[in-house]
Image 1 (cartoon, rainbow, N blue to C red):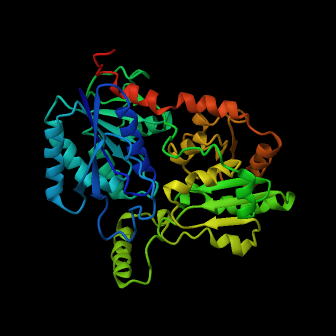
Image 2: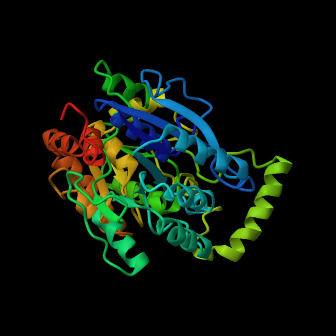
Image 3: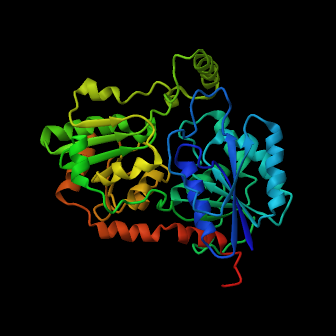
Length: 426
């Protein structure tokens, strides 16, 4: 029996990394003779950070139909749980531990855990790298990224862009493993794969698109912005670009679904104000001013510009409602200023939505311009408008999106990870 531990956030947490870790565990669990455990955080960040992280609204639970064992153990703020995490993993005695690397500050406990596990050379420690350069980076982030990743045995990257950044971080070219997963264990080889297409959120075959359009007051062509509102995701460009499009057409709507990243708690509470004060001081020392997005409020542009047919849902979207917003839309807008492989992009392919993205980061690798999506110039509002018009006048063939989704499947991803550990049926 093959045993795998997925170390990362469990399904009680909001956001793409939680969805990713759960999806990965489910995909590996579907392979024969494989036992999967999720060892999750209980608290992922220092308590001074003024945000809510847990999903308190979703009724749909992603692990109800699986045999996956999940334990919430690791607490950023309690050293005793770091040791407990190590001991529990050693009790499980897995061949593979897959660590989700997405937030540099988590390197403080993760570096401790990895170094202790590393003493047991029979465990392959895989770092699933969602980023190298932190999107809201600081001096501390860069330091933690380097020291933590230096202890990883095998890396997974989701794009060649991330692979190049890894090489730049360590000033060396890491050896690439084969795409099928053939590799030398714990020699810091890189398995360059992809961000798999999500299956957690199911397409509703009985969905009445026109009915929901009427209920929401949407026009014929619907563009979707989905996910946490972060500065790098470029909503401050999406809104004015859509406003320009409206000057040319009256049959378009913009659907914005997502929480403001730094506005998930009641700002009036004294405890929140105190956290913001302490956290603000820490950021002044560690964060470049241009990277501070605590006062990022792009939704204000809707009223400021007088944008019509723009529908905003700024609360966290429960799991059971996600399909509605994707199935009622015609294209997803990813006009990012900086990009690492995107969960929203992968989610879009699951719902057969073409991606309209900027030509930054990994997007030129994953979006075939005019074939399964369209690319716009970074920070060029006119280029973004032109891209939206193209998607209306020259719609993408859904079969091309299906082809991409098949290639970027979780099954292929899981098989590559398990390649070195064949089961008796192989």
